[in-house]
Image 1 (spheres, rainbow, N blue to C red):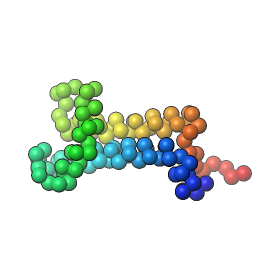
Image 2: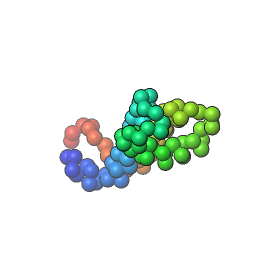
Image 3: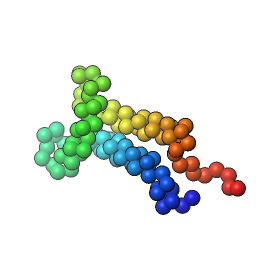
Image 4: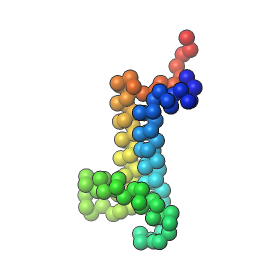
Length: 106
């Protein structure tokens, strides 16, 4: 199965997986950039990271204790996104809806 066929056939797997991966790594980028930039910095890259990740942080802050510092909350976001991707992939594998690459040739 070539790449174009795989994407067209399994778009419902690839698109959500891509979005979750982008959010996950953006959350990690926000944490790393947060080590060097003030929280109220006018830096356009920092504002982009905040704008993209703030909705996710809002959801994560509901299930995270209020005493958690923001930087740790961003790391929790990274971990939550990782496990959400794992559960999503596993669920589609169990339902036989995920792409299966490799294996023995017939």
